[in-house]
Structures are given as structure tokens and as C-alpha cells.
Length: 215
Image 1 (cartoon, rainbow, N blue to C red):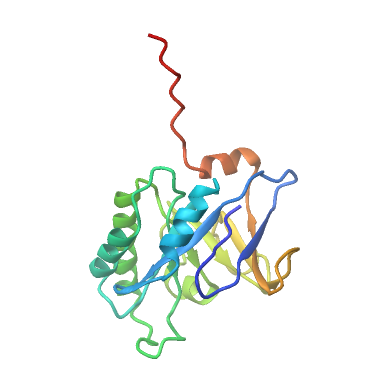
Image 2: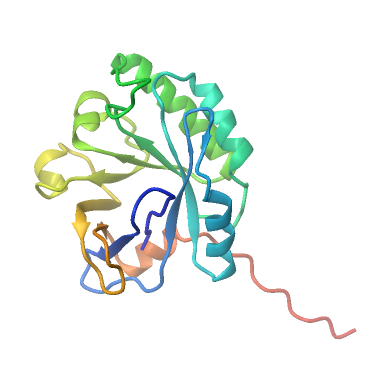
């Protein structure tokens, strides 16, 4: 299951919604934000996850006061085009915590930026991005939009179907204050909405090993 990790947040634990859980682990690693911020631990986390055999993908957090093409270029410059990587994640939330860009832009402009980012991320990685979002942003911008994408929904007060109207989801972040064995701080916890066969479709397709030559 994807376990988001980044320099400034605790790890995340995931479980499955189906009766039989998918096996294995995976991680979504924060890479970039806006057009000039690179998580200082991204390269180390990216290489370490691959070294120990954990499937991993990268995610970008949109900064609404920066042009989309500049953010897309920043993602391309900093995230390797790795065929073994999971689909990238585009984090869509209002930047209310930001001192430099707390405003909410018009819905039309937000969707224009989002579509540019999604297209460039897919072109760069060869994989259709997953969209992570929260209740407020989805209600104001994404409701009824982008039906061809998988969604990772944050909903800590109720199940997704109760507050996200007509939105199928792939992952559900149901708490930010969970606890798991071996971690002494609160963690995000998530649910994968699928079966083991569904999970195998999310994992990157690895090329078959070449047999040794005998001639």
C-alpha cells in the first residue's frame, strides 16, 4: 500500500478495504512544490526505497501563485523518469497555510493549471497521475471534473461516499493521527479500495529478467 513520506511529516500506514489485503509495501515520496521547492530528502528517499525493493512514486504539491508550466518544468527537472516508479501524485489543496500565497484562485484558472500539470506529469513518467485532494478543494474545484483519473481522497470525519458526491476513489486517507507498531508518533492512515489483483495493476510493470546466454 502506498505510504507517503517526506522530510517534514511522519510516515503513513495503510490498510486495505477488501477482505483480502494486497501484499507488499509501497511509498509516495514528496518531491516538489511550486516552481522552486525540492524536498531536501527526496533524492535520498527515492534511492533508498529502490535499493530495498519498495515500489515508490513521487508527488508534487501545486502552488497556486506560480504558473503551471513553471511547476511542470520543476517536476521534470527533479523527478527521474524511472520505468519502475509508481504513478506520480498531484496534490491539490488550497495553500491556506502559506504566507506568500494563501488566496484561492478562480475555478476555471485552477482547472487550467491542473490539466497542464497532469498532462506534463503523464508525458514525463509514462503513467497517468493520481490526484490527491481534500473535501474543500474537491467541492469548490474538482466536483464533476476529471473523471478519467484515480483519486486519493482525504476524509477524516466520514467515509468518502458521504461527502464526495459521485467520486470513485482509489485511496482514502481516513486519519492523520493514527498509530502503528514501531512508530512513536501519530501517522496518516489510508485505505486502498480494491483487491490484490487491483493492487497489482497499480504496481509498475517490471520487465522480465533475461535468461543467461548459453552460446
